[in-house]
Image 1: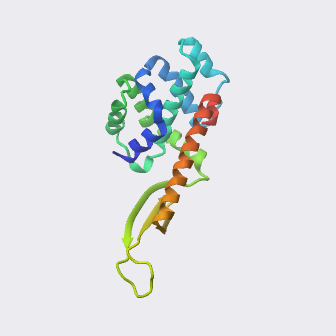
Image 2: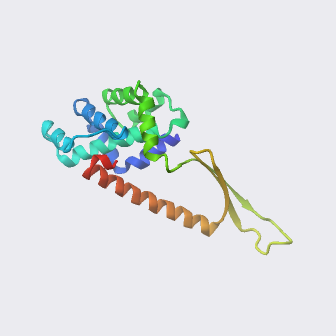
Image 3: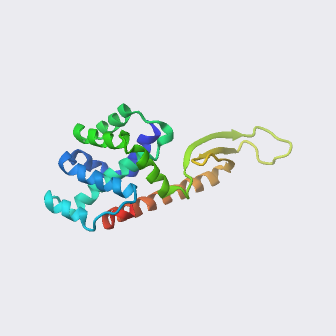
Length: 206
């Protein structure tokens, strides 16, 4: 499983279930809104409500559809360092049961002429916050030592690489590693809640 696929599955969460229901007729206006949001362009107030009325779809469902589309675009454009090929992008969406016509429309956006503009817009949104792009780790165990009292206790060496090129190498005891893991999991859950609230209340928050 690629990093893009892992990030996408985690970001979508239980919203994956709505992917098979997406249809081209209302996908396109939602894509247009997502593109405007990424480029930080003006979006008419109540646009999602009007889409709900036009296509006779519940407002909550339209919010979910928009959130899914925005997430797919954001995750894909945010993984530019991985150079995801179009065939791979389509295959991942096919596995998530998205219809071929919807996949084609999304592919045109992420690989079309506006791709550089979208990537630039996304970078502008996150330029103040370098993000983690790679994580390497190994477990070290000291068998014996004339200096250390504690031997045969595993500790973890981690190397984090960030989008700004910086690398951070640090060592963790097993208890500290579990604390870090728990803290990150908690933050990710909270972030997902905030993103869900923003998508449903105000599309510009995304």
